[in-house]
Amino acid sequence: MPVVPVLIVSGIALVDVFAGSGMFWLPLLAAGPALAASTNGPRGVLCVGLLAAVLGAALGFREAGPGHELAAVLAAVLAVTLASALASALRGRRERVLAAVRSVAEAAQHAVLKPIPETVGPFRVAVRYSAAAAEARIGGDLYAVVPTPHGVRLIVGDVRGKGLPAVEIAALVLGVFREAAYDEPDLLAVVGRIERSLARNLGPDDFVTAVVVGHPRAGQLEVVNCGHAPPLLIPASGGVFAVEATRPAPPLGLRVLVDEPPCLEILPFAEGDQLLLYTDGVIEARDRAREFYPLAERMARHVSGEPEYILSAVHDELLAHVGGRLHDDAALLLLRMQDDGAEVVPSASEARATAAPEPEGFGGHESVPVVSRTWTAAVGADGGRRSAAVFSSGAGH
Image (cartoon, rainbow, N blue to C red):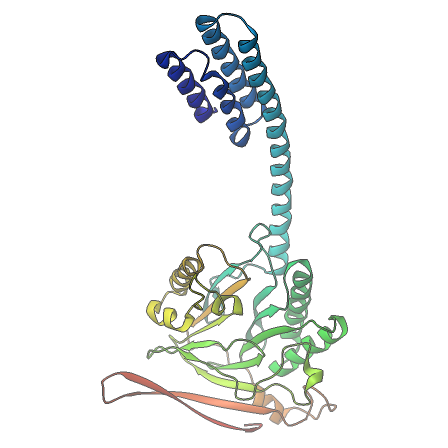
């Protein structure tokens, strides 16, 4: 029911009756069917146009009788009604096409970015994703969490560029990751599989930044950062800390620029600890004053035992920070350790110590730096809690 257009037409007719100004107000009756074209289908537009024509004819005969002026008014109302009905039909067709495109985009998103359950192995998981192309609902950011015989493994990454080419590369990375995560006991070998696949399929200017995380045993996480924003570690004891790579590595697809493999970080991760992985669309989001979104500060403000609540609060603040619409794809993935009784599988360093020699190359027997960190908390003189990272590095340690 075109309520608003009918009210407008009725209001114009009442103004004409009480104003008593002849036919001065009658041409405005055409506003009714014109407005109905934006809210209703062709049938609603024709009904409003017919109402406007009938009221216009009645008022015109009452005030001036038949004449050229009345004929011109009625002709204008009928012309606007027909044009509005055609515009309404075209709008409806475009909306149906857009709905079909959205359904295809949603199917593609579910195929590429598969829904992640709230619980994966010993972790509680929460995800928030916003594509820059809001109508498409999918972009170049990627994430996946995979339970494997070697422990839970996950990836969060960002493809250079936007649109369909970025989606194609994201699908390629996720497909290789899901397969390699099951096959390879060594997390660096998983990264190597992705690197080799991208080297064969990427253009000269394309690359993917990514963080690959593995949980080989209770109380430990393995992290490989390939040119991506550092994850945020939120220990149960309090605080928010950026896990900076000890030795920066280039993004995936650009390893030809360096001769050394990426560094494997080993982090303590006990019950109640949380790890946030995100893409640069989050930390590079700007407000009207061109200020970046302070992710670490906002995370500290919303830390709780509910990952879903934390990401909902952070995501809402992020959208408010940019004024409601992001200009880049943004993904947030939060892990929370809920059970220390996970199955123990060999860690990366143990696998290298016991494995037979492999051919030389990425993931082979070359010396790969492994950094093991421990997080200790202390109370400062001011009563505040401070944390320090203690780590040792060296090949195979």
